[in-house]
Amino acid sequence: VANTVANNFGFTLSAGKFALNAVGAINKIIPDSVISGASKGLRKISKEAPLWTPSLPKGNNFNINPTLQSQKKVVYFSSCINRTMGNPKQADEESSLGDIVVILLERAGYEIIIPDNINGLCCGMPFSSKGFKKQGSNMSDELEIALKKASKNGQYPILCDMSPCSKTMSQNFSDEVKVHDSVEFIMDYLIDDLEFNQIDDSVVIHTTCSVRKLGQAEKLANLARLCSTNVTIPLSVSCCGFAGDKGFTLPELNKSALRNLKAEIPENTKYAFSTSKTCEIGLSEHSGLDYKSIFYLVERCTR
Image (cartoon, one colour):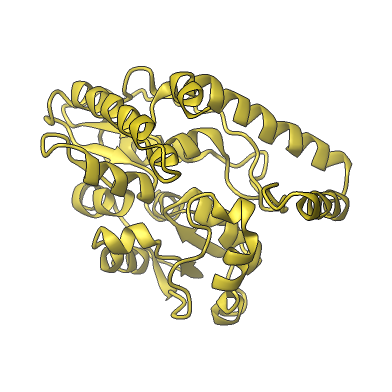
């Protein structure tokens, strides 16, 4: 099964988008309570069945259209999760993460390069994290070759929009292919080319495990404070417990890890941000807020 998925990865992602959109269409007709009850019933029969929640995203069509030509260039690799899933509870008129990243990069004067055959590319973590090391290594090698080509052997910086994937690539790739995570890229490459206008709205930030392990936690806090005068980083939450995709099949882990989150969020907080889509799904479910990528906050504050 792992071989089949890896060898047909673009098709696999398309099937995933179709399934997410199908569930979303059903949810427009059938109330949350009914779908939730049916999902819980399935889990009583099989603990392997994923639990449906109102925060489950719809499918996302990664169809971005960069237009700017510039001497400054960046390779933008959107993770397979972000190419497949929209935001939790995403409104129909809401811009996708890919569109937001394009707006922000072009606002800073960057020409965007998308790797060839991006629909079939993956860092390999979905395979290696489940013990399929060979398939994960093959996917990682394929991505490294594609990014090396797109960046002209490292001549252009490479941006990834999801922290766990950035961390995986930083561990697996050679020194010739340096991948920058969202926070690192914004703070090291974009900050001098954008005009930040602080908002007074209360925002809450979740620091993912990957951001901590990459040594970017302080940079994330500084970036958030550059955008807002009122930033909360809950002290009771370390790992959110979603653990890649474990939050779908072991939701009790996510629920336990975030049991104190809501109490730490100030009243009247409307905006919440992080750097990993799967973490944002669980955070949205247990906070009452709609968590999005930190790119949304930066885009808003640099218009």
